Image 1 (cartoon, one colour):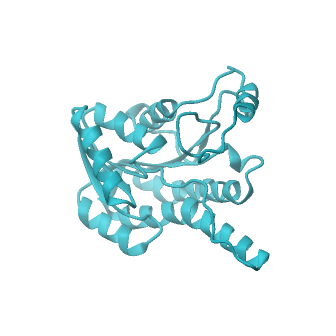
Image 2: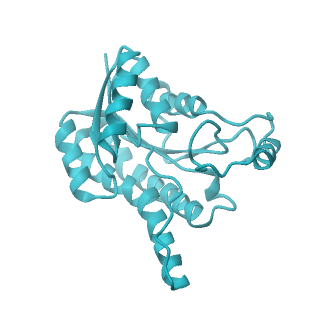
Image 3: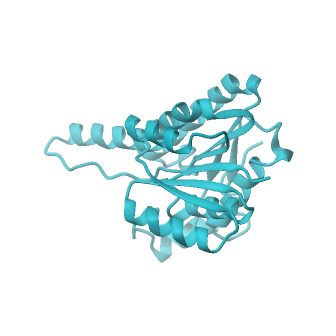
Length: 244
């Protein structure tokens, strides 16, 4: 039976890989993004090559009106909610360095925490027993992450609290925390050969991750075999950051 899946930030990169994985399984997948043209193009490309149905919705997850409209557009039981929107954010330059610092931190918190919080709250009534919420964290939460890493650390704390809140109703909540993932525009042209080699060298398996690696883990967490996994941050980084 086809599931209903919502993937924020599903137009490109990791979010698109996740949406594609569920569509390949025949699920109905809603993907969101802020730009109508890119959402329309991604929707058409994914939908044309997979058995599932893909529906694009223009939505900025940091805007309450947008996520309220998303809930109205979906308006059916959601089996899987993936909070995949986020990333590095450039604040507007300012003559006051403290104001610029404040704006940078506020932008990262809004994009990487508040968006997930607002989206999940707006869609809460569409979740039910055996639904799952999966949010994308980052290895940056553990080290060298700056405002972005701090925001992803806050996301993990929120997700753990959400698990405790929703767990008694049969809903799971977890964070997938990738390390270096090649093949995305995350670094916005800032990836050099030297940096790539350094990040690969930190891993145990001596390779970068791929969007498909993340998609497969998210897909598993949404499967019946993962129903007792909740409240966790699951690291996906080839051993670059290890836990015991």
